[in-house]
Image: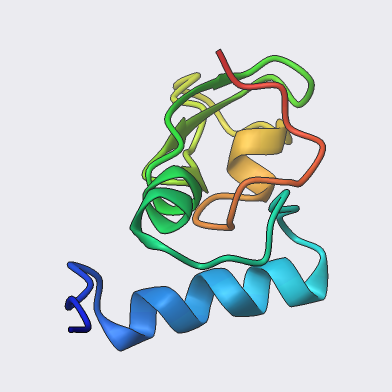
Length: 86
């Protein structure tokens, strides 16, 4: 019996495409619910790029003034494969 994933086809395809294009680097190519959850729900602070991550995407910095920081430049993009998130 095959179980249904809790993810939409669009979410699954987004993770697979990000993995294939090198934007993220999944250790295994087994796109099961655990792997997808980890890829889609990465949250925390990316210390390498000095930017906040919510739901696997970079957020604007919130410095209150125009700036060219990583979060502002990459807002909405998937987390980089070399991210160091804590």
